[in-house]
Image (cartoon, rainbow over the protein chains, first blue to last red):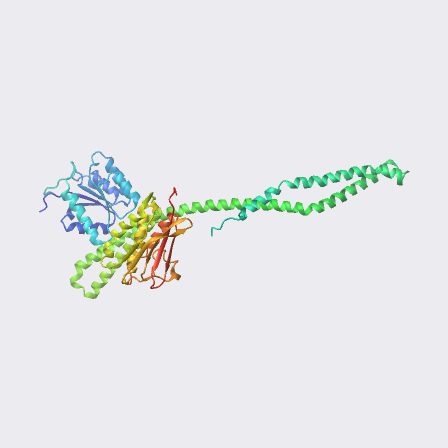
Length: 154
Length: 351
């Protein structure tokens, strides 16, 4: 059924936000394409295939949906790691945050993000935003070399 | 408030006065000492007189003792009278010295207080910044969750719920939405106070045209009579001033909704304290002048949400922006007799 979907790494510490995001992505059957990391450290473990993720197939996600305010390692630090790593630096990163603060917005663009999305408070708007992000980055966009290409595999 | 200064300010007087008299005590002390010395010399020659006229048979020692005693007594008496005469002057001088010292201490104290206040202000500002940062981050998340889960509940449980319970869910959702709007408003208000201003000269007439374009939808089919006077170029942050005028004109449009025809006037008034005055006048529902102080407060509203929509942040933004430009805001109104909102802006730098 799903022909060419790619993995989404969702870095989000709030389980409610995770549930609502998966709910939104569920409408396009994108929910099972999502790996969830609950903090910055877990996100880095996933990206570097270490810790709990040492056995995962070695390919980068097609997009990282990154929250900024995270326990242990902040989103901004995760972003810095991604952008300074030879193998990861091309991976599309979309900031998905509650923060409208100018300094977050400017700093993350300076670090080379691909998009900055403020989570809408209204649920309808939120569902729309997440759906569009999911469809665009996991379906429409052609990810850089080295990304997961999931043709009919789990 | 800004009366021309006819006499120097009080604090200047307090410092200048003791300083000018500060050198005089030296002469005041020297003069009595000098007189005392002369009297003593006079007393010394008294021996000659004693020997000649009164007591030719007294011995040298005796006359010397008498002379010394007498001249000392005279010198002491002279010194006493002179010093007593000068005493009040001396006391005054000492008092002035003390006063001056106190004034200096006061100045130092005030300086220290001022310094403390600045530090406190800076801290408060930083706190405010981190406060709005956490509001932005943390307060919005639970709201999104409330709305999200209510929505999911509505979707899943609608078949089992009666109209009353469905209305409860809608009310929860609407309230959360409204809180979201209030938080956004508050964040905008806080950002307006912090963002860097980009100052430039720009045409007000053009800005008003732009604003009216943006309000086209609100003004459609209202038959509003617009009267726009000649408008000058002003100096300021165009985006912020646009927000000010957009607020004022949108308010005028909103509060004239019961009027037929509605009239809105935009123009300049006579200069106030050397600043350009702009006003937006309408024939709308107006307001009671006794609430004029509340008009520009955050989330202060003079009308119920049922009468006129809005959160009450608009005029607070207006005031904050105009204050940042160094201008003033004020309003005049009559209940059911319209309102005039005025702002003043400093003149162009080169004029």
